[in-house]
Image (cartoon, rainbow, N blue to C red; front, side):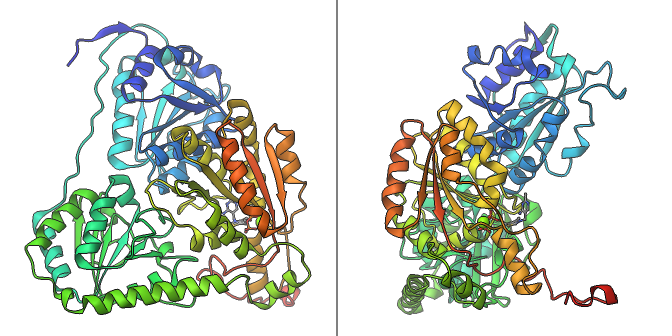
Length: 584
Ligand SMILES: Cc1ncc(C[n+]2csc(CCOP(=O)(O)OP(=O)(O)O)c2C)c(N)n1
Ligand SMILES: [Mg+2]
């Protein structure tokens, strides 16, 4: 270990960031951290100023998800820090290794109710993997480094909380090398049992989750699928966990997922859940199919032991790295006779048949057919959301990165998003906050400037997040926003339609021309009314990205609505008081 050196705590912090490979920090300036900010450029760190701290934490999340490296952000104590809350929760459920730095009220006045004071640790206690509090300036480098190490070790947000007076002074500090702990393949006996189950399987199916992406296990997942001739489903919102063009790729499970994936996993006798927590929302019945194979033996592999067997009953749980575990299984399978070899051709036939039947169904499914949707689209000259999504799918460049928001059309997009490489899809994950997609794609673009970057956003969610157009214009960040203008908070309106006899409240939106708004911000804005215009507009927007230009492609779509989000969680209203009786 290097001998300690004399430095200021700000220098210890910034040197630690540099040692951890940090090149970008997102945030809004604040007096609390000026002393550290001042030396960012000398350490090779670009400070990316944003419009709202929620944008900063989402950008850090997108940066981390696209690059596999830490995303970092910082904010003023008090209000700047509380603006992080939603983004931290979102990053927690996206398993994103972000480090958010939260300077706090000075230690000499803490508790007196001074300016911009709030307790900053309890707020984040349930949405972080680690909270480092610098309780003495001498410990700045040590605790800062631990935040970075823990964020990566546990794949989630770490908070670095620093009383603002602790940035100043003179300390002796050692800047340590990053600590990266390998997880390994997992328990040998569990791997043996898993290999036995897979070898005996007559209809094995793989679910490839976010862990495959995080661990860089694509090649091993392909090899396992090929060895077992097993179809591979993507776990919910991880459509980039397995290359879509592979013959065994059958598409995503979950809300608006692939019927082929659902019908095939329903037949499984053994499921290999590789790098997935099998989250409850992602395995709900869909398209009227209650597909989860309750009789099947489930092998679950995850780097977080707490999720093993948590949601679904399992036969074997393996606490390990998806890549190392997959490699260990492949080795064990090479020495075993595979029972599935007997019906291999028949299974491959079933996979191909289900895939082509789903593809044909999707091709013919140009619009929604429920009475509400037929009614609203009959009176509209706008584009159907599904035909819009299909045209976008065809026009997207092969190496595109796409973030998706929470909303009806963004969710239907799940059926139409296919990727060849990992780190391509950045959906708002289980936290499900509207306003996620746009700042996240900005962060992803900064991490991977050569890749074309698109955010799918509904017009309601756009109202929450469009302020970051300022950041795009000011910082020359070139992304493309596909904005679905249906003049409604559609996903919630669907509940009014299905459960509340169309008693609409707060769901209809009066929009400005969002294309004109984009132009007013110094970005490009294009209104699209015809499906034929989608591909050329998307391609022009993608080209503009290389000049650091952001484009808003405002898709004028009908108000029709796909299946609801939470059919599971709503029921018809029952009123007991006479006053409310008509609200049935
Ligand atoms: C921050 C936040 N507020 C509210 C919600 C509840 N919510 C879920 S979907 C949705 C509607 C989204 O509307 P829009 O973005 O216009 O997309 P559309 O459904 O119309 O396609 C709302 C309000 C949420 N998920 N997140
Ligand atoms: Mg909408």
